[in-house]
Length: 113
Length: 117
Image (cartoon, rainbow over all chains, first blue to last red):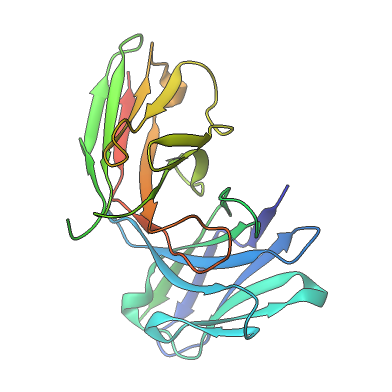
């Protein structure tokens, strides 16, 4: 079964600093990978997804993620954090041939002024 | 509608009562998904519909949980004889088509927070 592990339940950065949120996946074949953001009292919003085109995927709000098969990773980055980036971020994986999406436990990002 | 809507947004019930949670997907979306999200955890897949057909219910934790989508649009998740461990956020999502193939995106509703006393 597919799964993802998010390293670090809480990440704190200063405004303007690099954001790095880690996600590793477990799958026998390369899956589809996603990053979602959840703001308080709102639904999950898709940031970006990897579906086997370019390994470097650019998403909304300046975020990007790189699929690294050799490391089974799909880490999320943003060069310069903004206060509005404070939220919970979820990595997710789905097999290529069905609809069973599995989410990581989430990483709460705090941005300090 | 403009997005996925869910009702009620909050539900407090006593142990042993039945609850019904409603999901109204984006108009025209064929696929509908239910997830459960415990505090501090990511969403956990419960079940999936393609039109009115429930194609995957492998995530439903036990037979107290059931879901239907009789006309291929609105869906209801029903929990019978609720228990305190059922307390969680229940999220619905929809997509134009299934996720296999990678071209589709799930759109999530705001969720229903269920508290069983």
